[in-house]
Image 1 (cartoon, rainbow, N blue to C red):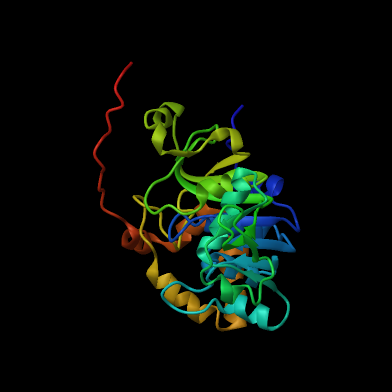
Image 2 (image 1 turned 60 degrees about the vertical axis):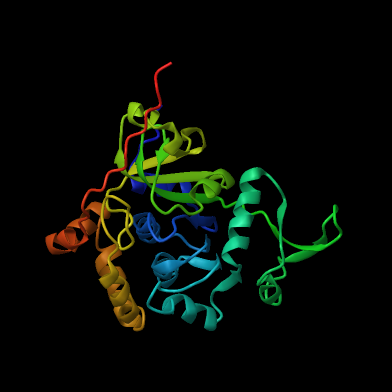
Length: 300
């Protein structure tokens, strides 16, 4: 039975008020379209977990969807602060829990493996542990030296954007990889968005590129352009101009409200959003093909 559905139906069936939601993707393949659909459906009291909140969570927070954010590094990459997120934290309306990148990924790795925690060598966790009691110290049972531990993270929902998937949810992605595989295995429910939906034969032709198997996926959605303003390797470039513009938009609550009204609430879906970006933006974000060499798996 196919797992292919619309993003609207997938969010309606998978994302619930109060859920812990983890949107994966590091620098690219950030599932912005899923975030916009969550905003349209007015989800509330979400715990938003992500290694780098990026503009994605700034928008969700600005729309009033979040009760708490769990993160490692929060900023508008290359520009400055996440102003909506900071304003809500400083106003006391948003709970927060901070980790280092490595400790955040360690939490997901433990969750994916079914472990209660993972140990790490002491690093910057010394500073973080002053504000985050989730960091604990125990003795290594083999050497007796101290190690730092962090608890497993098992989100209710993982949202992962990929370059291509089949209708059963078998997913392939390439370029800079983040925590997509770990969070998919750690989460209770998995929502996939894909630039392309391809035949199963295409997926089977290059099995080593299949990082997320269909048997852990609940829904797969065909959403071209999902990652804008971030990028999808081989499909479109990062929209650096938008990241600069967001710094100005998020500085003014009225501008922020107007942007959400025009670009999220006022649009039916990602196709309408992509059309609204216009042909000039499409042209600016185009990338030249750069193919990898084919791999010969041989025939048995």
